[in-house]
Image 1 (cartoon, rainbow, N blue to C red):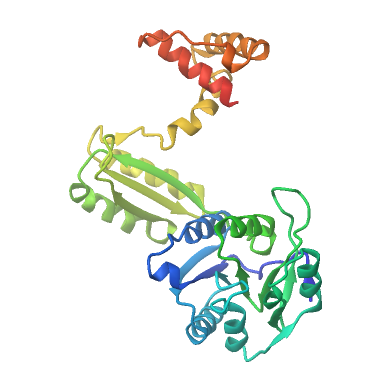
Image 2: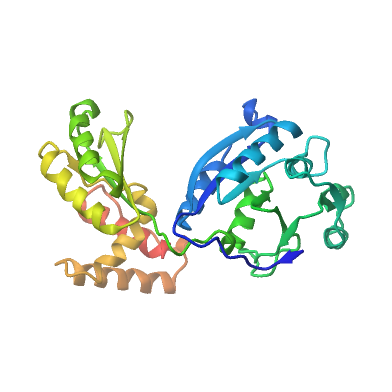
Length: 325
């Protein structure tokens, strides 16, 4: 059965469990980046990831985990174990989990032939109850030539990170939960974590289930010692907790730290031209001059005079912002 779109189950709470399949992960041969991407993307879609499991390339082990996860979570996403070789056993495992059997799927056979995938015939053998989902490739804007396979509430993603990202980006609608939007605030504190622990405990007790307060020490930063995260399904509790902590944390300990500042620099500079800042007109004029120069000359024909002073440092940032725009 083919499917172009699917609605998540009704109700506010939509949960997910992630199963990462692969001996190479457990043996440390390959670094797992799929978990981070899946968790981050699903949360942005209003889905709460409740558990992540990493399992070897063993049919019985994968099947047992699928059976457990599928009964506990709204969605189960597996990554890995899909391919032409002997250790690609995820399709077999999901069939075993649901008492199904592998059968050649005519639509998949056609897709493999169209792709010229000699040696990939194994991919056409899927559980008989499998559904196929054709999303839109975010890189090309065209429908995927090979679908995502699902069985019941289990979605079987490829383990190759680039492919997994493209497939999930193209099929976000399968998991989107419009009833919930998670909100996040991050605070950076220049104080020892142990010294502020009682304050954090009091804050969590005060706000209860309205938000989750996380504390993460960073021993390598020159700017702060602890990052605090405030998570909630509503904006209100976050603002209230921010005010609560601002009053109770050591005076001057909250640091206006901007993570990934270089990546955000261009946007921040251009926002100055639309703000009420006293620098607005000066920044706008400087950027207009730089943009005119960039329109007339290539980067290889331009140079920025730099002697380390404040004015040329500002010019360097403005030039970078204009180039990045």
